[in-house]
Image 1: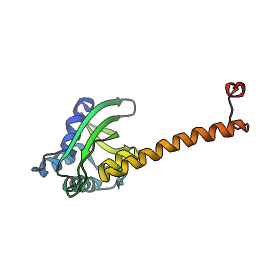
Image 2: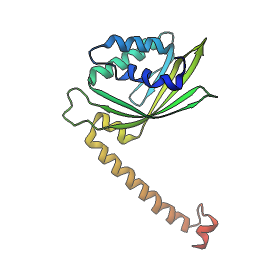
Image 3: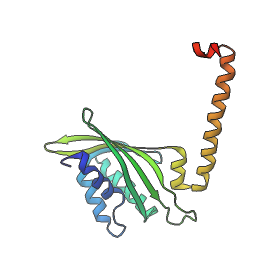
Image 4: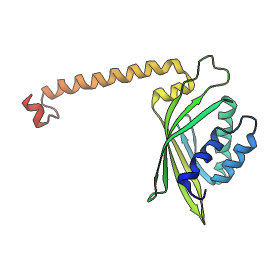
Length: 180
């Protein structure tokens, strides 16, 4: 990439949502934009940095396309931390497993891309994908996402009740809590 902040959207789209009829385009993009020793971390797959780890990252992306021939991806926001050579992307992705009976649902994720510069060009050295649990389930088992969302809301209520109960016993009280 010459200007990562502007180039990253087309790079990500070529690597992930490449035409289902053109796997060569995906291979070319990963070979062009990722370092040979790149690293990939996703909640469902990890590739450690190694001599030819880019080949393994390519296989992960290829498997994703085999599983989901129809994949939609939108980059909603992007931020570049130039001091650290990191790009953050807020992404919405619709991933439908080929033989799944469930209707696909869009999932949100945060992608953290670590860049390295070689001459005038920038390359992806490490990619980390972060999902909320229910968003990860939207990709795999959409009906369970609602259960997880409910459990997270219940946990929020339980935290509130426990905080009030333990603060009444003197734990972790602010001055304002003491006045109430």
